[in-house]
Length: 248
Image (tube, rainbow, N blue to C red; front, side):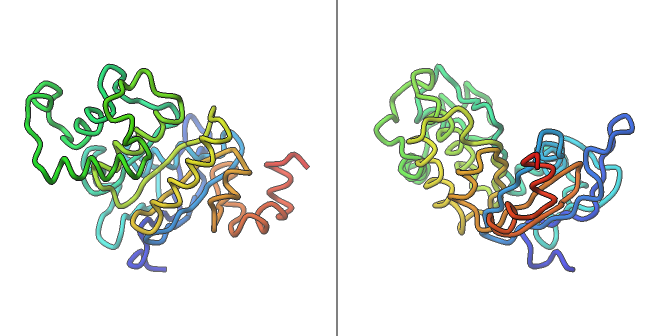
């Protein structure tokens, strides 16, 4: 199978920590514009997989390609970000003393220093892009609110917005609805669904109802390998999944 027509292509990835295989010949792919949901019990290898994709962890063996020409295993973490991969961790990391607008402005600047960014004058095109992202994440009315006064869900959306300022082709999103209210979960589902198509997304989540609401394709990991794949109904009825994930 060729990586040529895939946005992300992982094959036979193995990662060992002190003899424990966090990934065990893991293979999976993501199509351009697809939203892939990944589920699995704790210790299944979900975080290690994202660490490999973003350059934080180097595998013992296997391949990881971004598109048809970018070998992720040859790049540093900053180079992977520059290539077009953004990662959102479970705990939001917004700048609480800055406004929502300033958080997005800072994200736009990339590697520039904090003080230089605040002193710089952004162009009308950059201002327009911030306005667009504020609209996408539903925080236009909170543009002058400080990060610290935002609700938990709003902080999560702001962090997604900060990633969008870098215009990534692939977004890795870790447990986006943990700790959210039902209304925030519904809004997050709408947000992520709206991003699919223009971006590819890999969403790791434990909330099965949320996964069902957004996923066309679900991949189940267990002990560092893929044990099932398909739509939510197929996955939930798979006897191996019921055994390892649902305790049956």
